[in-house]
Image (cartoon, rainbow, N blue to C red):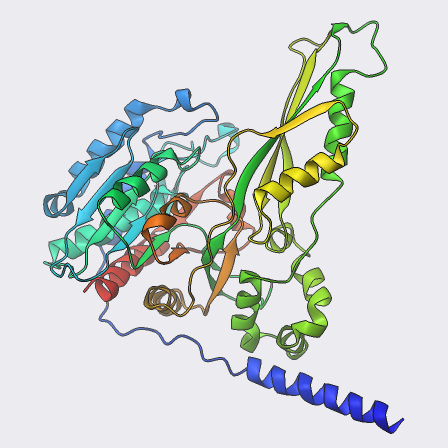
Amino acid sequence: MALFVFGLVLLMAVLAARTIAAGRRLPIAPPAGDPIAIDGERAARRLVEAIRFQTITWQVPSMRSAEALAGFRQWLVKSYPRFHADTERTILHGGTLIYRWQGSDPRRKPIILMAHQDVVPALDPSRWSFPPFAGVEQDGVIWGRGAVDDKGPLVALFEAVETLAERGFRPRADVYLVSGHDEEGESRGAQDAAMWLKTRGVKAEFVLDEGSAIITDNPVTGGRVALIGISEKGYATLRITASAPGGHSSAPPDQSAVLLLARALEAIAGDGFELRYTGPVVSMMDELAGQMAPMQRVAVANAWLFAPLLERRIAATPAGAAMLRTTMAPTMLAASPKENVLPTTAEALINYRLAPWDDPAAILARARRAVRGMPVKIAFTRPPLPAAPVSSTTSRGYRAIAGWATKLGNAPAAPMLVIGGTDSRMLAPVADDIYRFTPIPFDLEEGEMIHGRNEHISRAHLAMMVEFYAQLIRSTAS
């Protein structure tokens, strides 16, 4: 009995000590720097104009509008004359843009800032509050496809560099702006940009792209948190093909191609991936521990004991669960071209987002085990992308991004795993660290507008984003 009591006391002491330590993590101090006056009216006007260019990336690359992209590039030159006068611009095949704002000190590592030109289609435009490509501002809010993803950040970035150039700012380190034309597709533009930079010997201190934001109702703490992506999940799409004799639907066989495909889909989707409390999500929870309720802090500080509890808590939402495992989602189906014809083949696509601890070969092997013995074929549609390397949370670049996010966004910063995909992953060969963050505050429900309906941003948030990029450039490239 005495031994049991001693063990219990020791356990409580360990839990308490670790909890106290977790609550004493020092936040990143807001950086010093005078405010930069931003012309919010000009930024809003230009975002309205940018939204009107229908630079849509469709599922079929050949449907992409080269004319819209060309018009948008001309608009950038016209709208930001001072920055274009001070920089070298390169247009890669397809329309990806690379700007070099040459620094005065060649010994300094450059920085790379990214925002893509293309947008996803706007489905059901009749259900939008305003036509998705009309570019409407009403009561201080700009509406339209791309307002957040990614015309808003792109305009904010160009407004920032134009503002700095107008005021005579000259960077000491090279500043590169990379703007892909097909981020919502295959990201070939970003791949070409990485090759272009690499052949010229560019090795950046850091890259900053889209990926996360300031979440005002973060489920971990219930308050505002600026989540900065330090890695992003991998990407792969699996094609399942089932074959069977075709014929007339009036005399169906026991095993049709569609039924075979359905069984294969059920087998693969039914073998879901396990939750794992590891990687960037641990860094996020550790950083936020000091703002949690006491019992949450105990669990986070003692994950060696409470990991299953933390996994269940984080996985309460689909987005939270996605940070803890590889996900798979059946997304596309194809079979007969006519309702009364039995198809000879039926196909399905499953989209995977790979966690950093799962590699593509293991994913494929797992799917093959699930359909063992079934007369179906499975293969990746194209070479898969593994998860991106995890970037530092102690680097100068991270501390500057987190610091300005905290100061301007009135929110503590924490690292996270981005569950979507960005162009930035392609720049890994030319950067020490890659970060994914857009300084836009919104709640989880508002986040559904991204790739959804009624995408919008307030003029005030757009102006804040402009100042964020201007301050970041001034503090890291000076």
